[in-house]
Image (cartoon, rainbow, N blue to C red; front, side, top):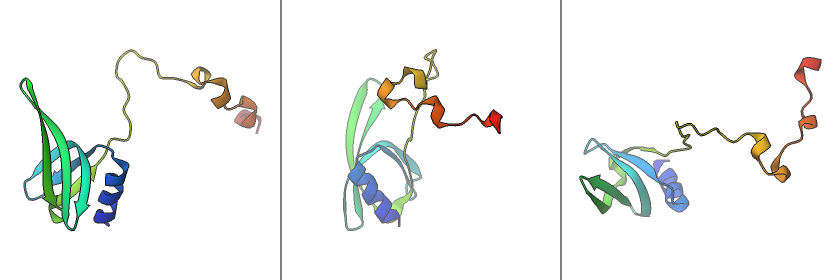
Length: 104
């Protein structure tokens, strides 16, 4: 099942965080480039001091302990989130589609 999920993530091209059991470390913001047999090729960047390094690493499928991905993020700044009135009119849902629950 993990093999299928990793294949799906490879096809999606999304960034993932991968935990390697045998090395007890996380690889952050990696892209899964390909899967060949039981080898998974990852590409990721690491920032050290004033330098950014790009890495490509091959890991065995059996050494992957966990795979996570970011679903969404929200700014903590003073930016107000968009509400339905801010959407283009064509994308707004009319208020009369949902009956008022107080009338029940």
